[in-house]
Image 1 (cartoon, chains in turn blue, cyan, green, brown):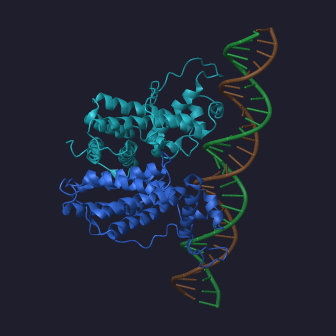
Image 2 (cartoon, rainbow over the protein chains, first blue to last red):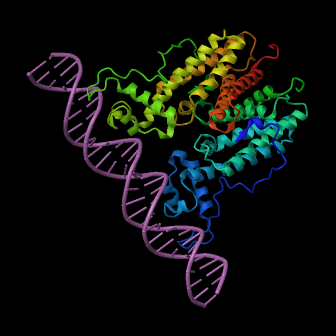
Image 3 (cartoon, rainbow over the protein chains, first blue to last red):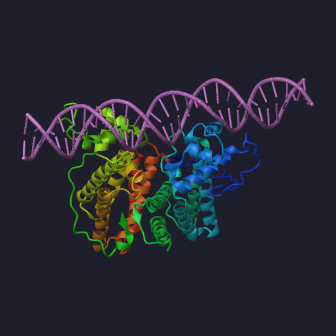
Length: 232
Length: 232
DNA sequence: TCTCAAATGTGAACGACGTCAACATGAGGC
DNA sequence: GCCTCATGTTGACGTCGTTCACATTTGAGA
């Protein structure tokens, strides 16, 4: 959860980079296979869930199916997750981890500043377009009913913080208006998130190849919304 | 569906105002009640679905429960809808009807122009905040897998057109930049939609009363994104 | 090396759900 | 008054998430 009313109490010095994201990676998955005792079933379950969601959508995710693909009883899952919801939470958590990495890479890779801001926005939309079902698990309300768990909250908050940090840096450089950073960040996140949702929701049909261009346009407009009158 | 590549082929002269929206209205529901033959079961089913969604969320919607509340068999629904998905489509369609009305009222009520734009944006977010579950049915991917049906498509497109028309008018008044109207509209819709999703998604926790203020802030930033440099 | 408790996987079963097919009932035109 | 069609009911099926009692393996301590 992001608390907008905690603007002055946030601390930005405790960011820790997570381990490598396993999203989309088929995963080794063979350590010791002896009928019983899978080895690392928990991670395998998450990976398989991600794979199924990616190919068939969230609604097609079935515990029985996940178990079958892993040659494991359908109830083995309950030794690692409280229920199906908990599995989805784990999926979302992994998604946020990879997502945060993409955002940070874009920001750093483009050399921060205005270009970094633009790159970060485009990376956001690209992530959603390339992982629509996964993105929906993260933001579509399948999760986060309040019972989301601390790890998910921390991970999504960390992703948000990448954006907040960037905005603060841009403010200090005089490029972005000096509104409360979290207020600004919520606007930016919302705008890009909305564009992403529309892009993957089927609500807006575009000619092929256009998602990239549309994303660029969106980010340009967002920049106009937050830039100072001084900055070009 | 909104086709961005049809910018030059859209026609804006065939708008027809729909009948009064029945969203949230408990509905009379008693015409001729004789155990068999409900009278107007189709509308009653939609109304009950809306009521259940409003109080318990989309996931809690059960055909058996809907039937029970209406003192009707659980399968009576199949005389009026192909399946559960079709019922959700009907719900979304009604949502879009009411939604469009809110947007149009805000735009007209504030006297169009810049104030109308702001009012329309705030009305959008207010609708989402006041009808979060309903809003999720409309935009959360429960519908619109491509099998959404013509009526839903027309209704949602009509809502979108309210925004497009407003933007075109603002362009002609020299208040909004002269980008392709649909490109602009997709950005604006996306930005406000994203803010609405974040507001109702539990991802952003705000102090009470803030949704209105946050909506106002979002709409101000959107205006900065689309206004001409000439307009104040 | 042996033992035994804890961790992990299995199988059968339950209730709820969406959906279907066969049947029952009522309304309205002839 | 009859007949047809729209509309509502009943019973059943298959799938789902979940639970419970049980089986198997692991690993720490003797």
